[in-house]
Length: 68
Image (cartoon, rainbow, N blue to C red; front, top):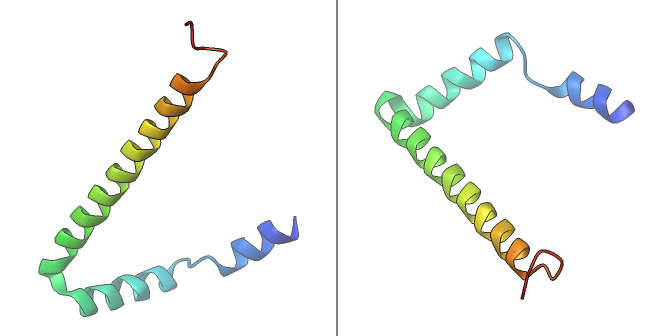
């Protein structure tokens, strides 16, 4: 319970999010942000694809589900 309360107290809200967004905009500029988001999206997609491959490998190596 304490961990949840501590996490909720330290999450950025309202003005803090606006300030963070403005700082990112100033650091990267308007043209770099779409490229940055595209890179993050590709990274997430690659991670999910890797997780699916691992799950498939685990299922194929499982002796219970393997009918040989």
